[in-house]
Image 1 (spheres, rainbow, N blue to C red):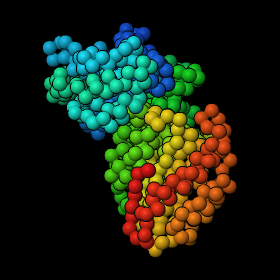
Image 2: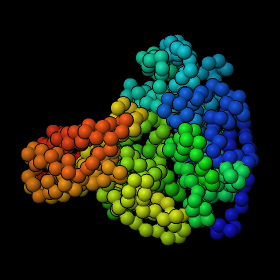
Image 3: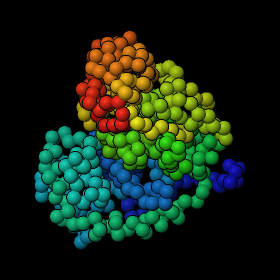
Image 4: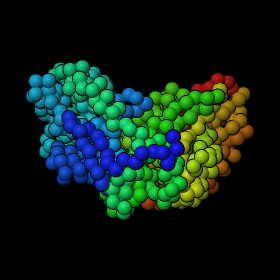
Length: 493
């Protein structure tokens, strides 16, 4: 279908709890939280931070991904209303037991004294609800991971964790209303898909939802000045914190064509629209050292929203994904209209705030070569908090060893320069040298010549340099016994 033949729809359509909603003239910058609290008077969702950090605004959003209905926790404070087209929004007001009493999650929170001041409680309940639907008997690790994006200012985590373990004593997901309605909701959402481009909002605050990836390419050529909104985990803050205009905004989080995963000739290809959550299974299987690192990216809600392509395209010097992907020799596919080009990821970053991307061109996919025999990989993140925090330093390392000699190596860091950047001096100190502690000590010294680190409130320049040198030493301490001339060992660090 050509772009000219596409129908244009002027309203967004979605399900809110148990009812259908159709809204016309929806501004691009209108958030889900403002809509829920101010327009619908559904005030269970709270605004605590307005930046996706505290989880008090957590709701579930169900959407069709390649035909399957998937519910995920999201931060309503930075999710834009226009992006809900074709989705099912579930707020805490919709939760209920099978007999109309408290939902099992709510009852567990009451009985285990999991609520103190109560401000954050609805967000905790929604996160635990999503976890319980996936894992009725979760491990402590699963609970802690699910609650990464929820902050309790009363420091009441222990009773909340007890409540998470207790939920299944009060019911089962099979008897939950959301599960009972799943097929009916899936059919209703499928019926909302009409293949139209959605254009809504006033001229100075316009939202565009392309029908498919080809339509996105056409729309972006028509509006090269547009703000691209994938997960909104950055753009949401532009609106809530900086009051920046984003119109026209092209929303792409719903495009299945940007959420594909493929493995061809030992290269894993991830669509740029894949969220961190949706990409995790493929990375765990094919690039396993990234599994633990991936769980350090933000919190659950942000990983459900944020995308790999967005993290790269924003060009931040402290983005989590570029350093570890550069170390793995990742490449990008970029597209403008019908024209595509491919480049090494490291070449995409030119200077602070500047990337090799033409007007109307977007990141379409990321290509990651699979680790080979003799290749030892690691990914490190240093931040003030272990969970749900931005990197002070991020580092990816990939070292190949043959017969006790380092035959290839790549080291890339974030937070150490104006862009994610290779450590060329440190690499040269390793290349062709024996696999030994002395070699890695030399590389730790050499890396001081690679960077003039950032100096800001997250970390001083001196601290960043010391940490980076110590990460080189850490790599040896953790992997010194992994290479004895043959074999491939890929450990998570």
